[in-house]
Image 1 (cartoon, helix red, strand yellow):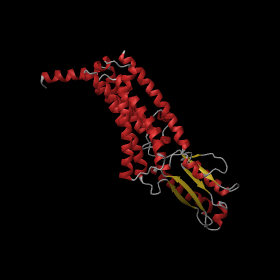
Image 2 (cartoon, one colour):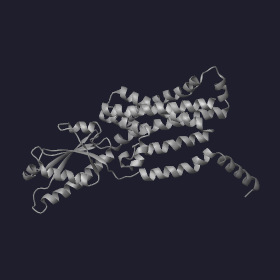
Image 3 (cartoon, rainbow, N blue to C red):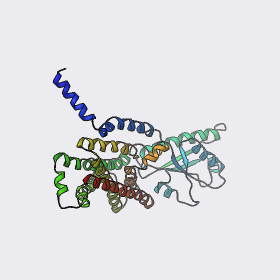
Image 4 (tube, rainbow, N blue to C red):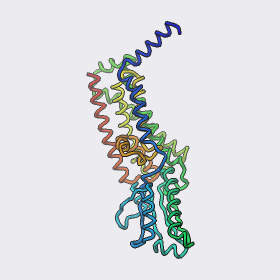
Length: 366
């Protein structure tokens, strides 16, 4: 190899690895992310919240229901007697509801019509297909145990799919991808804003202007908040026009959720830009935040499938709350309990992230 070229390569390596932050981004981040993803991602659907509705004393139905819970796929949902099963699914407390025949399962089966009804939340099409497959397997096994030897009519079930009757994957994926795109654009653009000013030498001009620290910070962040909101409106419109994803909830809920989310992501991007010394570091720092945020948000894999330690980390992910909000608003009509609980968590994260960004920004200016 040419001596000059060898020296040039050595110089680039030394320059890149000289900074401790860059070494952490290059070598520490991949190991951390690989560990998280290996533990968190699973294609097996489990921890499905199931509620059962039956008449008191329906022993056969109770045995069938216990088979569901004993399978390891389903978790028991408790509810108040007389509560509407549709409300359980609409509020997100249950992923599925198993309902016994009116006269009891044993009486119905004796008449040759041992049919159960299964309500399934298909806003997550992948989970809905798994619930139907699990239910078919469990009920077939229960039917064989109850009647196989006597040749009596088999038990069966009727599935009622809610919110996404055709179980189209786009109805589930498009709202999640919308949140991912807004997160990607706002964090990367904001993370690179201050570092770009430093590299171009215009940051000193901004600091020397007759503006307070707060005014400088607002001037650097408000434009990206407005751009993020415009981008959110654009992707919602595109999802409706191109993929037919409905907007069943009120627009004010959608706007408020988008505002809280964009403020959070812009604040995270601002914090990254105050730590990074170059645009390269800012971009790597942005992707270091984005990859775990996207994969632990529930866009592709249910958060409930992850180990408990990973779920605890996922509950610090603003994208998870926004994905839940946008899917609930667009597909279910915006249940108020789901809306306010997730919006409250997102608003707290927005306040915390903005406070951290402001504190770090002041330190940078001083």
